[in-house]
Length: 106
Image 1 (cartoon, rainbow, N blue to C red):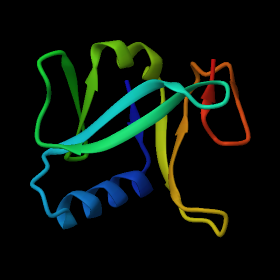
Image 2: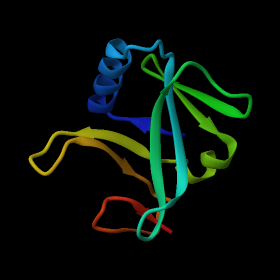
Image 3: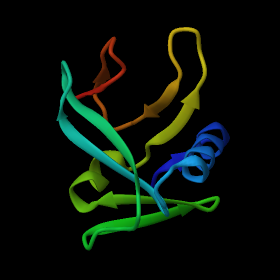
């Protein structure tokens, strides 16, 4: 299960409502890369793919493919505003460590 904080829900609602393209939810993926292992990718999506799990939280639909599901189980996604940079932050209990670039490490 993936969790969204109130800040993340509000940021996603704003992004979906202001996009020039129609979107029904957010696709979340974990990809190889980064300095120590995995990186997170997010993109507004028109709908789920055939192998996606659909998670709906407070009216926000998350589309997660089967390969990504195991890596995100228990993850909380937050949206943080800070002088160092604003954006989505992932608190993933499955990541063994985190490096200075804020990407999850294997």
